[in-house]
Length: 129
Image (cartoon, rainbow, N blue to C red; front, top):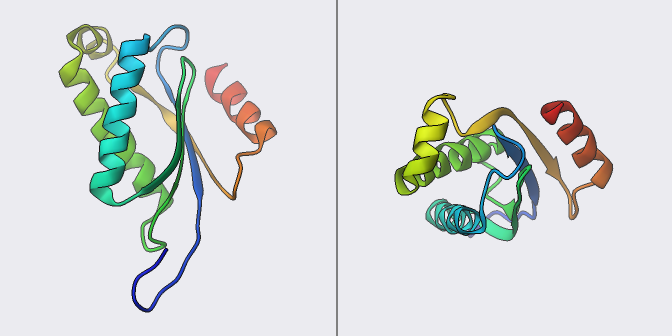
């Protein structure tokens, strides 16, 4: 990747969690969230490599321009996805409206080709305990 004068190859693994652990996303909500995240990545020119949505966490692997801070990427993904998901799924808006937000405050950012399973486990243990 790169512009006319710059070349780079940076892959970020971003992980964050919904506020409610068990059974948070039914398959239709998970599929909607995936679509929303894919749309955000396209809009902001994040090159999406992989995307996983499950009941405990969201994991995205992507590449971006090195001038974009990783914390800004995750903030963009979390905030825009929450707004769109809560707009499109009224029952989630009712549930999460009482809790103040859809996502837990913490996140994990890692670089490299793969996300180390032990790092993910430690993050989830800390955040979900």
